Image 1 (tube, rainbow, N blue to C red):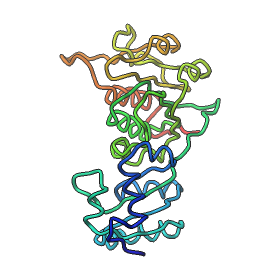
Image 2: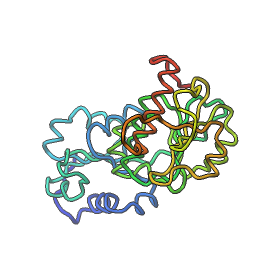
Image 3: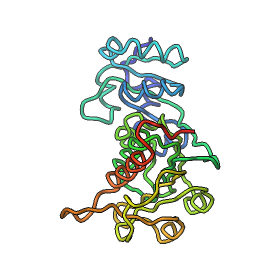
Amino acid sequence: MRTVASRDNPAYKALAKLAASAAERRKRGLTVIEGAHLVRACLDAGHPVAQLFLTRAAAGAEAALAGRARAAAAVIVELADALFDAVSGVESPSGVIAVVATPAGRPVPPGARFCLALEDLQDPGNVGTLLRSAAAAGVEHVLLSPTCAFAWSPKVLRAGQGAHFAVNIVEGADLAAFVAGFAGTSVALCGEAEASLYDADLRGPLALLVGNEGAGLSPVLERAATVRARIPMPGRAESLNAGVAGSVALFEAVRQRGAGQGNRR
């Protein structure tokens, strides 16, 4: 393990540029993930780590994680605390940062049974929450429209808590074309819909559609769906945010399918 204590070190300068610039990450096809939990989830999924940066304290506490990364051909670098703090994206840095190749989404196969489609979600927290809920619910594929928050941004990664490595994430998706070609039931969550989500049959192949935090789904996508449904709210709240609403719908599907039976194919 080599030690870096200078801001002029080329490896550190490259890391700082990646951490500070979404454009740089997109251009190079790289993602910066912070925290031992996320790095562990990445390795557990069989996704290689290119570089692993650790503070001295983390190098001791996470020796097993560093060993796994090294065995997978990662370059291990010990960073001085001040340098690590300067590139960290959180108030209380964990001492663990990895650079990985941004995973490429796979085409959704015709036999997909459980999909989530997100249209124009702007809040990274909502996108990350829905990815986490999707992974927990057994969703196979998550599709994001071109105007959604970038799935591999640091804020979405933190909110997702490792879910990124448990589902197939397809960014820049043509959601109208996807829904038109989907063989199962597509359910559009709409606050003004007459039908209740709890009356919809969610047991077969399913694509759940969740729209923008303020505007909801576009009229085009609403019309393309086979079912329009709302979540009944007997209380006084005007609405649920997109992350909560989508999560409620995902786990209603889990309930109908039978918890623990699994939905992956």
